[in-house]
Image 1 (cartoon, helix red, strand yellow):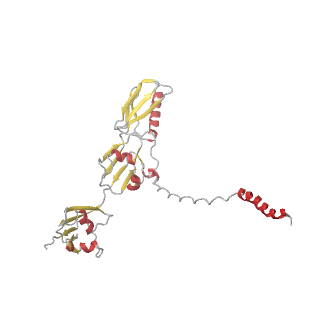
Image 2: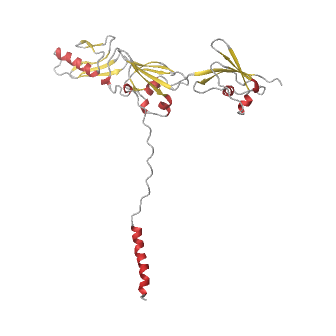
Image 3: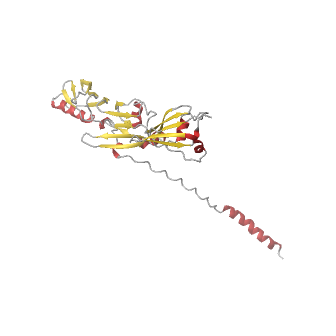
Length: 308
């Protein structure tokens, strides 16, 4: 037998191994793409595109304007708009600018300069120094409710900040109303948690002069806890948080050592003047053996003392 014949299988295997290693390896399967984020909630179009510059702003009474014509030294002035919408300028006298944007005011002044042969090719600029005529009303659960002037474009959070921010009585919504001169208004409700804590930029709407921002107070249920508790008194619970007898007693500091928690009374007065009394065994409620009664506005929880 040819001695080399035994070596042929080994030689074939030896030649095949490099080819196997050189063969292209299949890539691992790609990881699935992350789930798409839910689309941001859209707001009504009137609250999306605000005035973005002075040229989108209508001049009104008490606004302060900086007016300049580069060829006339006398016409470099700062003027407050009168209540009738006019400004009084050197060389020109009374000029009506109310209701115009700055570009239109520039054109009106330039037209008068040409008509009176004061300048052949006027170069007039009108800039708004103080926005006073139309303000934003911030009302409700803010530290300093009132009317605030718009000094340039402002967002909802910026104007609420000028009013001192939300106070601890703020509810869960902010209402922005945009009335129109003719009739009607646009209105949008904004979720405070999504705006402030989640930081959704689409909800930080740009405001316009004349907007009304209302921060409703948190709606609360008032209940009274008396008797053998550590801190008797009146306690408030958010409407959307169902207040129970156990929660009310806990809010009042809990029962004292002398309390008879098996004979707790809830006194409820109805609008027709009738009076209803419910008895609750708080010991059984704590053990899950009895239902914890939901309280209503002005309910009175009385925890009696034990005499032995």
